[in-house]
Image 1 (tube, rainbow, N blue to C red):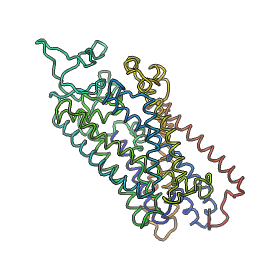
Image 2: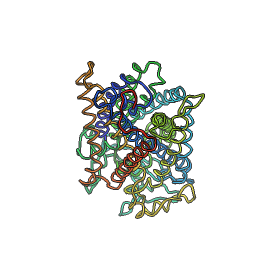
Image 3: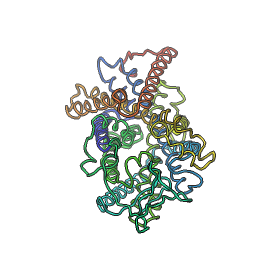
Image 4: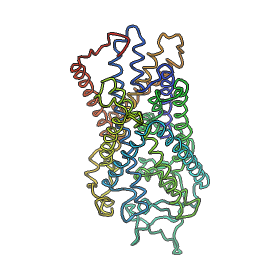
Length: 545
């Protein structure tokens, strides 16, 4: 997973350089949508395609900007469900929160973030600044503790074993049935293995790479394993998912018209935000989390959890503060995670609303999207429309978030607390396993839109600087060309991965189908709108697209 994130970071860095360079030429509202128009209008022969280019970029970017916030509010619903289940296990399961409860959280969260967004750039900047300081500090702290846990617990030493049912750690080996099912007492607490002296067998940690069958990955035996490429195809598939945690650096370009010194500040902000977010935070944090994996909490434990990082926080907290106290550390870190979700959703919602506003202002989308709030000067109609779409996508992402490979067993479903907020929405294991994972499909749909937008942005950088006196072969050709090829390569793996039997097929092919339908509808909308308004699809003058 670490190399997948590294690959995604390199892709994003090439894209960020493209954004930074092109923003120096065309500071203004609309991000890549605006850049597409200006880049084509600057050319003597290609200017006539400026309207088509900006519509393709704008329409394609909505697959990212309209779906990504929905994914984030869906994740927020799952996260809040995990925390509530941890605090009130008799009301809800933390490992499998209730779909109805998560959906309600997603709806409320969507409109709450939209309220901040419609307040304007100053409010959004203040909120994001405070959030980023807290978030980065929390990630660094967790990384240090996770690394410390691994270093201080060599193979064969006494350690803690995590139980996903009680969301707690235990210092003894669990007693199990022949099929591996953990034996539990009346309070659902795992029973210990008993030695010849009648005492619990202490748990000793180990770092096996694979399970006894040799099919399932469990832990990394050493640090080198974490950063190694174990399989190139898996790395590419991981990159198509990992891009989700790195996007957002380009959002600042949509605020070009609201910045005091856009030509100076926007390029710096684009590069700095990605480096801080990707290099300082996620590469370090994901290395620590992967290196932490052990026989007491394996990769398979993480796969079956609604919040694996939360589980790890409980373990390291118990090791540091004493058993039973790790939950306080997890809850403190949970606050920072919630703040991070606000900041991420807010950044994308701000950008998406402004791209929609720019298209509405140019009459490439319904004209009411091109209106600004009289006092806040924000595209309030685009913001509230996006909030509604975000809430709907968030609910759809949650409905089957435990579908496909994440389907819980029938015994797990039966053990859930019964109630409309805790168990309604869960089907049988066979039914859920046969259905696609809705959260993964929404994520891959958003990511496909991201790859489209980033690939086009890299291409626009090459076009914009072509034959200009300030053209630089590294910054304006080689780096954008790498970004273009890398983005197209990740898009190709939506077909290559399933065709070669890597990972699941329902979600990437479903996401690809959604993207195709969105593109076809966009082409139809562009043709119909042009015909209704009597506008030529090709530009006849370099003055305006």
